[in-house]
Length: 491
Image 1 (cartoon, one colour):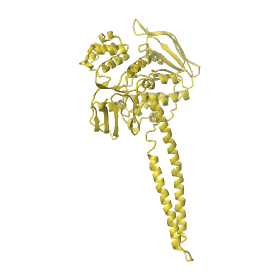
Image 2 (image 1 turned 90 degrees about the vertical axis):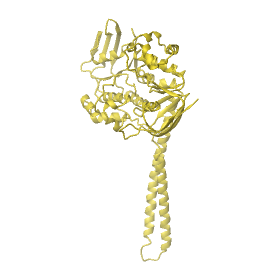
Image 3 (image 1 turned 60 degrees about the vertical axis):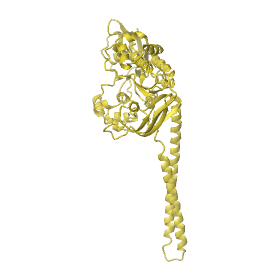
């Protein structure tokens, strides 16, 4: 057992006025299985890069172990997978790679296929096999679930549960619960390490938030009462002092003493008020913004929005999926599920009106308005205000929606290409929420999205019940949202 000690860590990017970390101190055991969570843009990937020594920082990070990072960056992917393994781990031992691949249910034959022909899920599993074939290293695993289907996530979660000595960045609650024993969380004003899985951490956080909110309300009432009492004592003191003035017989010394005592009491009450306000200022610093969202639904003139009859999709001689029959009615929340490569995204694009080769019959209601959230966010460029105008949505409403999703004003002023992957996804989701639509089609909307925002979006969909067809591998999200599940099977 050894410790990773972080002391007074301070870091900000060049040209930025806002520090990512400021005087942060904590320690981690290298045997722990740490789930790393926090809202988008808080610095999770940045912290992993600081552990790897990629940036200069103030403070200290001390450790007796070496770090290894997932995902690997391959300069050339047009090579055999076995050559990719050698690039990722030049000193690899074949038997170790084969052992980890077997645990991940990945056939050795993929090693002799071109790396680019592997599905995203196969690439993820191969990279994890390489990562865990190394010895005596502390592993930094950055969002491995984004390209894994639901069975793949369950498999990798069980696999990670047999390991130790890693930090795992993920926003999938079920995935984290299955494989971590500690949580490292980046809060609004601190970094915290807690024992337990994600559900334990969330329960403790909600309990602490409720306590702080209750204490805050109690102190607000106390401060209000003290302010009123202080004003009364000061007013009484002034009135008593005023009785010293005049020509009638009176004990002016006694009156002055009485007025002074009242003023002293007033000052004491003010001091208690100041102390209460200082105590209040310590509260609420780590309570996350989770404002309620509102979606703008447009009712359709018929109950049935779209219908697919025996649809098959093929990009060549071999079909990708089909035949699929599906009816979408108003109020449906349909989860489209299936393994990687079963044609889910192609089916969504077809319903959206994109040029996808198919056979069968596709019927869509006349004047049907569809709002589509695609998987890929790499093409986002330019200013958010220009994006809103070009998308035909109200700028102020769009920016307000992003603010509710915890995108700060400073981040909104950046070029979209500079935003984190999760913030880019929030841009597409906020656009979809703001634009009028009869049907929302979301393709893996929760990729890179933080847990608090996921819960906000769940509440939105449950409260307003828009018609939505979606692909999502977050088990908790699907269980809460879907009214119907349609499964596709690879051919």
